Amino acid sequence: MFKLDDNLLNELGLGALPAEDKRAMLGHIYETLEMRVGMTLAQQMTNEQLDEFEAFIDSNDEAGALKWLETNFPNYKQVVADELEKLKAEIKAQAPQIVAASQQPAQ
Image 1: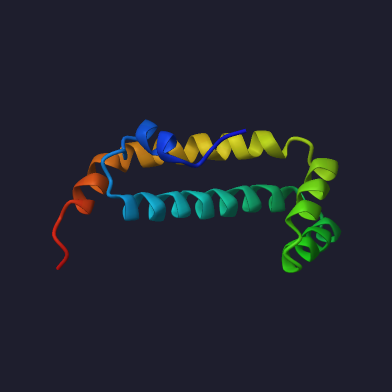
Image 2 (image 1 turned 45 degrees about the vertical axis):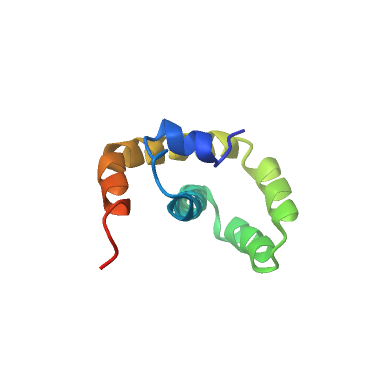
């Protein structure tokens, strides 16, 4: 589907970040994407569906959660793709500032 890796950071204009900052940025992208996709899908769920899905999340059953999404929200991959594109546009717009901040000496 997509990869969160150095190629993505290069595409976003963040290839010049130090390795530690790259790892942190990839983690931030993943967490932000996960939250946004979750919020978008949650708005489409009934209370019962929310309870079912949260049960998978609470038990750290990623495979079960994924299967549940595929069954109940077959368009979830499109939601992920759409949210990723929005996030990428936001990051690209801020890339020069992010890179500049990473090159400032620690205070």
